[in-house]
Length: 192
Image (tube, rainbow, N blue to C red):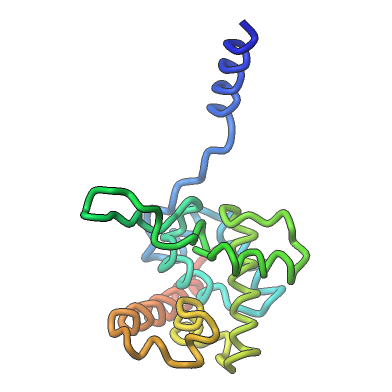
């Protein structure tokens, strides 16, 4: 009997809480995006104040990495096309931070309770990481393209120029740069 009661309570509690916010519908328009999900914008403004990373650079990076989905994960790998072998990486959440890098962020900032599925924490992570990119590789915070390349390849990979062997990644970085500029122009016209 106790087991049945526990199961009913557990199912009831899991149904009540923890729903993830939906990804914004119109991700091509920064003004529409912040009207739909003002929490995203507030988190990015907070990060801009703390880390000096412009909102439009954060937005373009996050849009590319997760499409603003809190529970985003890389796809599964399959052997022989059908046998699941786990995910391509440990990336998770808005920022698609890897386990090891996320742990480094939490240790470095003292934010032990940070979660990759929390927009404030994910945005703060992007600010922290991009500031390390300035420190380690000299990439300005306003340079969305090279900040994205360092974000994707890691600081050492960026320094080695590993992205040069990945034409597809260079195209993605160009799209991030274009989207950041579009967001910058749009944000200047939004009525808040």
